[in-house]
Amino acid sequence: MNVTQRDFHDAVLDPKSDRPNGLSDGTGQPAGRRFDVYRNNVAVSLTEALETAFPVITKLVGESNFKLLAGVFLRQHPPASPVLMLYGAEMPSFLVGFAPTQSIGYLPDVARLEQAMRESYHAADATPIGPALLQNTPPEALLASHVTLAPSVRLVRSSWPIYSVWAYNMIEGAPKPAMAAEDVIVLRADMDPEPTPLPPGGGAFVETILNGATFREAVDAGAAQAPDFDLTKVLSLLIGAGALTKLETSK
Amino acid sequence: MLDTSHTFDRLPQAAGIGYKAQYFTDLMNEPGAVQWLEIHAENYMGDGGRPLAQLRALSQRFAFSVHGVGLSIGGEGRLDADHLSRLKHLNDWLRPASFSEHLAWSTHDSHFLNDLLPLPYTNDTLTRVANHIDEVQSALGRQMLLENPSSYLAFDESTLTETDFLAEIVRKTGCGLLLDVNNVFVSATNLGTDPISYIDAFPLEFVGEIHLAGHDEEVDDHDRPLLIDSHNREVAEPVWALYSYVIEKAGKRPSLIEWDSDLPEWNVLEAEAQRAETVLSGVSA
Image (cartoon, rainbow over all chains, first blue to last red; front, side, top):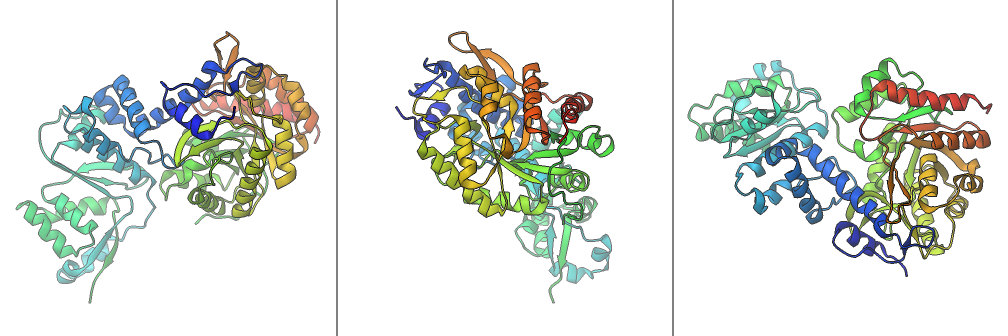
């Protein structure tokens, strides 16, 4: 009796299925629950990878619930690549449809933030432009220019207080979240990504920059989102984290 | 850019450890008996940030072994071309002294299962594995080492012993071998065979690296011991004894302490490397 890798794969992923025949303990007895070593290795290692990836989601639903959730997730979305550093990209959309956690409306967006932090951690390094370049560019030329943000910059816009939820679970003494929409930018000044809530209009501004529009279009988008949009505040946040890497002034 | 002026072209015949980020400062300041490092290739396939920055710094001082855990060389399907090119990219960038992978499979139907799954030893699987190794060696432009697995069960369809299978792979492909002494002990205990006979049948002259690790002890349905290759504790005493037997027989070989979960304090890990070093210093060449 030959065991194909399809048989093996299917039985490893489905703990309720029959174990494949044709496997022994080396002395002629059927392998029995020795096969479960592989089932266990696969489920436990992928569950641990997801716990590492989503520490806030783990805290929010509780560790034992997260293990159950991960068990469902990993069978619906087994890794498509041996590179696991970003495994779990489907977690936000999975949570949107996952019945047991429906009552926690902000869960998918918090998962988006956690995934954005991991992407930022592994993103390419880049050299920031000096603040002098910005200061020395005449305002009209600056408004017409295109700004490039560092590869490690991520933006997560939400109608939930996702930064406050993140901070409440990750930072000692952070205040209890209150209901608010929060747009969060992830910046990596050195090696450690940090999430920061953007001031009013900042989400629209950064999103427009990331879409490749001009500085002027981004400022307009910021002002359209919030009449009190404060460009200086957002710019100093970006410059402080070395997040501006290129300024292309058009002729 | 990686400064390659310090490139090490071979692993020292000395003790190394599996690298984890939390040991960075200890290794830069006080490496003790640790003379070389091994990384899991898949953890260093990002575009930048701390993981690659740490390798840049460490590669000035230590020889590196890149150890793949996801290529699925024993897989029925084709090798993942994208993954092979990621491995090539990492090898070209880091220029490690050694590259190794496993006699195992992990991917089926583009699902990566994140475990080293077993294969039967037959003429068909021999041909398949040899072809995959040819492909890896030609893609990377270097010789690779193939590691013996830890076994929890055996396939009824197998017609070759593991040692004959590995010797034949070496003959067909020109690859070298990575002898995991803990895996030998785990497999022999689990399958009711003799670890010394396994070593005696192993083509030791092709061994370019040795692995040592800790294991867990469980039992199977018939209350027979079932050892799990867990890499979460000190190397067990019978594994040290088997290692001494190997080194007396084969001479010095680069020897790695693998500790991948429940990570210990630095001094505990360094003491394991020191113990390997003591065994190595007991033989001449």
